[in-house]
Length: 254
Ligand code: PGA
Image (cartoon, rainbow, N blue to C red; front, top):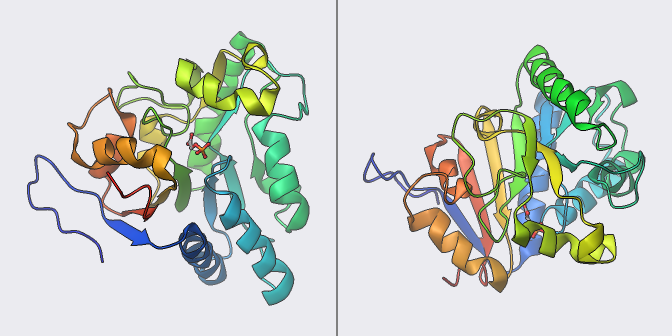
C-alpha cells in the first residue's frame, strides 16, 4: 500500500514492491487500460527503453485479445535523441512504432513524438510547440516513466532544475554509456537530446514510475531517501501527489 507522508519537508514516495517485474508491468498496463476505458480521450505520456517494454507488450495483448480501444487516445513521448536521421533505427520514435503504435489503433494524428532529425535552432522551436500541444490536449492524464542509473527522468540529467520544460539537453556520460549497445558503440550515441522538462512531467495528473533490476537499487535508494533536488532529478517525483513507484525485489534491495 502507499506509504504515508510523515515529514512534509521530506515527502515520501508511494512504493509497490513485486516479486517479478511482470507483475508490475501487468498492473501498470491494467491501470492504463482502465483509464482508457473510462476516458477514451485519455492523454498518455509515454517512455521508451527496457523498463516499460513489458507494459507495451501487455497493452498490445489487451488490444488484440480484449478489444482495448485506443482510437481516441492521445500520446506524447517523453524524449528523443537529437542529431539522428529521420527514422533512425535507434530513435525512440522508431522504437515506439515497432513496440506499440504499429500494433494498436492510436490514430496517427494523435501520436506526438519529438523529431530527432531537427537541427538545434528548429528543435528549440519544436520544444515550445510541444508544450503548447500538450496544454491544448488538456494536459497529460497518465505518464509512465523509468529512472536512469544516474537518477534521470526522461533526459532530465543530474543538474536539471525543478522548473524545466521541454527543451534540448546534453546527455550525461552514464546515459550515453547505457545507450551504447543500441547504437553499436559509444561513438555513435548522440551527445544531445530533447526531453520533456521536470515540470512537464510533474504536471501529469498521474505518474506510474518503474525500476527493475539490481543495477537500479542504489538510485532507487537515493530517489527515496536523498535530499530532493537537481543532483538526483528522480527525487522530484516525491513532490507529486499522485505517483506510484513499482519495484521488483532487486531494485528494492538497497
Ligand atoms: P532503462 O532506463 O529503461 O534503460 O533501464 C530507464 C531510463 O533511463 O529512464
